[in-house]
Length: 321
Length: 302
Image 1: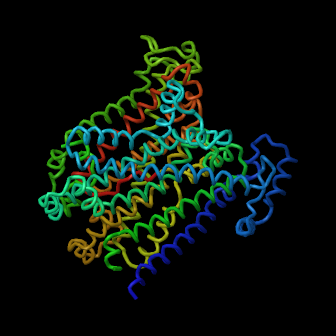
Image 2: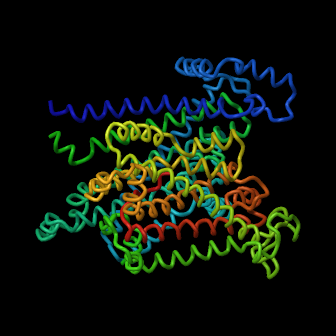
């Protein structure tokens, strides 16, 4: 059975993800329930009345022991019951579904732009090595990885939206009248996310391309008189992709966290902004739900990325063949 | 040599961690530090000096309101203008360097010290303990840092020390992993076996035999973590979960100023540029010392 080792790796990886998810749920619960001080008072603030504190304690079953509350919370979630929002007094789940969907759309589109863009730029930098394009790009890359996303976002809004009025400054997609409207609103958040992600992949693609371009078979291909673009794209690129794919996988998981800040900058109604806002309002069931779903997304993205890199790794692939 | 080579993690020489670096090696190592890393070090020193002497060089108090009228453009009294409350932006930015350097520095120190100790012990001990701890660390690493930082800081209440500790602890597994790999190489050396034969305790072997040989990697890790911590803490400050107002905190300043950016761009631009330059400098410096001190992980994984 040749498939066995890979299959086993994947199963191990999935088990680990599941354990991670459980651990994460425990940490989310504990960070809210087990911190020193009275939970009800922390939620309502110091000047809350005795009655309101008592009502909240009953609503959140704060008199029960913590393990019991954790068990109830978790089994509720398994059955699709995330509790009721303290602020909106409505079930949490529909909120999470809507907001998660929008976050996935933004993240997915950002990745869709990211993959060809960063590999293409890396390729270009390697092909024009040490030329002005390469140097210019290397400086852009260094700046891209050093400037915080919120700064990039704010200045993009300032120049492209406020001054030039090319694109809408806020991504209020609920108010979009058409799909083009929505895409225009998403343009700046997508650019902002790509600003942060591109650097690493360009670096990886460029250096692995340069290594491959030095190898004998590429020299042979050149000597046989094949066109430059054919050598680059058909002969060299496929063998230089592994490090780039690895970097893209890392970026995909970074994206789940990075999107939080970008959603806040552009007022995008996604899960990250929902989390930030429910923390501000101390809406415990909403905080727990959003944090858990965001973490689960992060773990899932990591899992998929790991399995994909595993399958796309040339060394493992040849062992399979 | 392009800037790519200067910042590239791939093209670094694989010459560290040297086992048993002899005395007098430091000056020779420093001579190999690239020019741009020296430049970066110089800029970092300027930042530190500014942070230390902020009270002496700031023209105004960083928190006093209406030292000028709101949204003044830069002139020769208010070099970087004033913000929405008429506070002097330059003074706030100067004091802000204290906040960020103190917070990011202590966060990176926490990651480096704890992660270094855990990593070295695991690398030296090996076996079942190592196996179990590495699994546990992998699980901790599967937690998205920003979400947990938000949870902890948001629920307990934002405060500088708490943010530093949280950001520092969240990076401990990453540092542990790198330090473990470095310690494993050293643990196989003869002088470790000799120390064991002499009857040295585990603690003494880790601290006196292994640590000096992996110190380079640890310094690189500290440097990398400082860069991350600045971005991370800046992001938290921007979201309103970092230092509390009216603390002159760069992330917070950007957040406070962005609503009124049409009235004046300076309260946002000044802290933003300072932060960007600082992170760029730290990154260039990190790449420089990585080149001479040995490998470590790279990539933007907050």
